[in-house]
Length: 293
Length: 310
Image: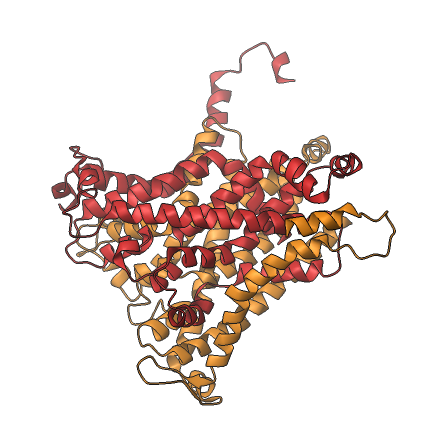
């Protein structure tokens, strides 16, 4: 309808419209400042020479640029710890968690999607209970058992523990993706002589590739982020995952702030990029998982 | 396993057959075993060790009956941790879900640069926990933190910098703020996805009936959002109850236990005082809390699904 109006509205109307939108813009700006400032500040603290950061009041934008902290954290003689090794450990840990989770998630999602079976409700409820469980509530018995079995300081075992906690959410995400695949497609494949595991392998998985990516990202960054189990089960500095190593650096008195921030920034880059890339799938999956329980 | 399942699948019974279909059980079994090993057995162990006295370095565990529970009920620090947990939970739910809903309403508007604003507003969600603590720790540093610059700007009458996370009155609000900063984009995205699923025809019909924007929001958007806000609230409760790393690294439960939630108190009991049995006992009380909240979640969800089915 509006494109039927050929005459331009007068400036007063435009100004009025703009003023009416003003609160919206102000609020959006406020939200953006609140969310972006801490991340911006981390970047500033890394790239400006540390003298500026230790000057009060600190300048709100970098007055000079010095990228040496990034080099320093890769130097072997750095006795404060090897952030590069720790990030490498985190990559290994997260990759193992992702692979184990993907395998089990496919089984679980295929079981929950499709015809209902007796006990399905209980299976779903068990998954939900696991999903709701705080890690801290079982860290004590897990620690005691793994200590007795001499399985502490083992990244693979840590990946197994992480998988147990992220699995329910992953299964819900993939189940919801599976549910969007029309039953006719499965039935047609079955009629054509495909087994049901064949249907899973040839039909369901290729179609749900984006869902699988979402599951992989969620599992990867759960392990990437996880601190409690890592801190209690890994005491060997060599195999610290990055969160444990960085946390240990916070508590050291003489930690140079620019190096610490450089480590934190390096650690955040992967999740920030990945989440932005797959945000749509992850959000759809997570919300479906959240709403459907 | 895959082989076994495909052998089963070779003999698909026609619809209506009474033969039980074993495939879902075969698929679910590995997961049940897996979760049994890593979740269920530890829970049982936890329960078991709450009846013993197992302190690292004090020899083998001895059965002590209900002594740990008696101690817990008389422990003022335990009651303190429950109170702190409740305060943290309620405050985070209100702030994070509230900010999330407002953010969703904003993100749902049409304006120039909306996609950029949406990406920026959801940044904290993708930002890992540890760097979050790291940067807030630095911003809130009493000597050098840029937080001082802002507070001095808005409250010029202050004569000295606040102690921030070390201040007994500020620690809790700050921890709530940090946790909410990290969590609110998730609730924003959840709410936004529900808002976008409201059929556009409803708004057009309301317009025809002479409703203005505010009325459309009040009578169409808001009722559609109530169920998701309630579910988000429960989820936020769970996430707040689970919250460990942000609190632990920001304040360590201090100053003077004002931010010592149940999970922090449990961790410190077991890994700082090495009193595993008493930590396990606190853990058992935590299960009760989780169980109640989960039941509430299932209840609300069923009600919501029933309403959706109508």
